[in-house]
Length: 301
Image (cartoon, rainbow, N blue to C red):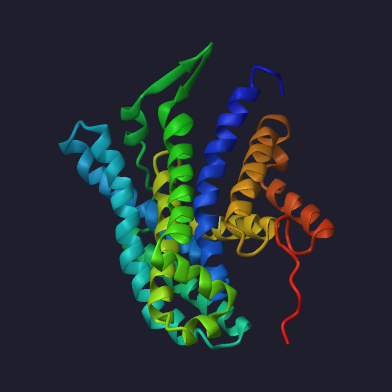
């Protein structure tokens, strides 16, 4: 890769890492608070993307405003989060809270398979995209290179704001502090009067919105086809495993690491593009089996 291509690789890498981080942030939040590895989380990414493309395609012929089309991406993520996340938490996750971790994993895997089939029933097998958002937001020229405003600014800033919002929510709001208390010791937090069902619902809905937002922001730059949720499930698990389960800030750093190295690989050794995230994950886990940012804890008896 030449020095001229390095800025392009960095922009591509940061934009890709931003999408990956949004999905991974929701996955690690659910694990940290509820102790569930949600295999169905990648389906939220796919539903967010398809819903966003549907909203944009419906609005584009009737509006010239890029702001309205961009807002439609957020609207799609919120709708998917509230409906899909709320229903799944109430019907499945809440009832499985006391199950064995393996059973929880299998239940979410079963939910993922059902959601994939429902996705095909609603949107079929044809590709969906919301590329009109990128076109209307225009380009930015830096030196001799032209970047899309969407990938250079919008996607990374949105991911960063989502991270800041989540950190503020967890550290500076009453509900957020109760959520953090649940991560430390569920039984003690419940005995102190914290409503575990309420916290579980809020946590799962926020995580679903984050996953769906990742898909919604991906819709303008990629074509969504059946299987998109599967790919993102595996990639987000690679990020979470690299960072350490339950590590939100760690997921941000791991996403940047994987995203930038993957983008550089695309320009230098494209045949290794798919394998790079998993190579990084394996190398990290060989050295630190619990992830880069997991703090060793004493065994509780």
